[in-house]
Image (cartoon, rainbow, N blue to C red):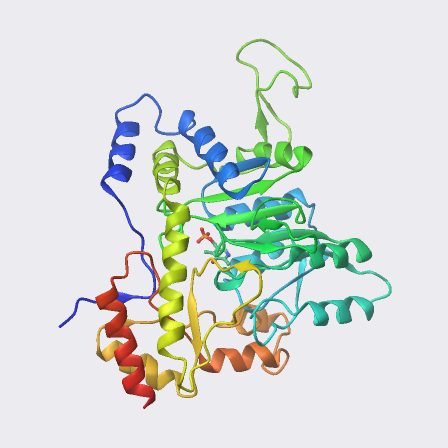
Length: 384
Ligand SMILES: *Cc1c(COP(=O)(O)O)cnc(C)c1O
């Protein structure tokens, strides 16, 4: 029997291990030089001016919502097809979450529906939008920025699935996910199922110096020792807590792993695209709906999601054969917590229908061609 194949997994090289051991033998396990190095390298990777490393993607979202001053009474729009944290960050700050249904092909927030909702709200009660690059498909943030400008909204882009991806703007320029050109803030996660693994970890990118300074402060208790920012100064020991912040720092151990993982991140996105093309080809003449092929984008393929009539049947058939596919996601608005806030089945029909048929097949750079053939063979066997 073949060994279990999961829908995603990390790859840790000998070099990654060496990088971590080096930090363990150094003077700093946290708050040392590896953090700044990881931030600099990550900013370079996504073409952003500033990057701030944090303890995980959820902390990154929370800090972004704080930086945007989300407060009770404010309303923020996101997509129901995401991990709960994309919506929860608004709730952490006491704000209200509204959802716009997904587009049936791209599975991203439907921008026509978003415009419709905003048009129907002449009082302008919304404050911001949190789009998600679901599965690795880059959001058209150029169009989204136009909408945001018109209705005076900020954008926090959840790019946890899309580091390395890009879309092409109306001038023909490739715009990398996270480059800060159209979104105010962007968020990434380094959980082991994501592209870059640090155990737990996250990153915020931005081109806005004010937001950068604010988030750096909030990441470490709202405390600063920077002489230029201090209100008073009593001497070398002196620090000030200027805002109510958190300890959302990443360790140097994790940052070293992140720096090492970044060295071949681009190649790994390439490998993910190869795997996707092979699946597409294998399923071409079947009833399976394969991921939408967008024009002039680089899909980062965090996930390879198909839709199939008998999803539960296929899920169980694969499980019996040691293939652990996954359903992503149970729509956020139908989670019991959000139902308590008034959301109901039937509110967002496109994502609810998607949820009945979707399945994420194994997709990670070290998936061997033997393993992929085995997955394909089992899927085809089931649909026939
Ligand atoms: C993983 C993920 C997060 C949260 O990241 P963590 O590092 O697990 O806290 C947020 N949004 C999306 C879309 C994610 O996939």
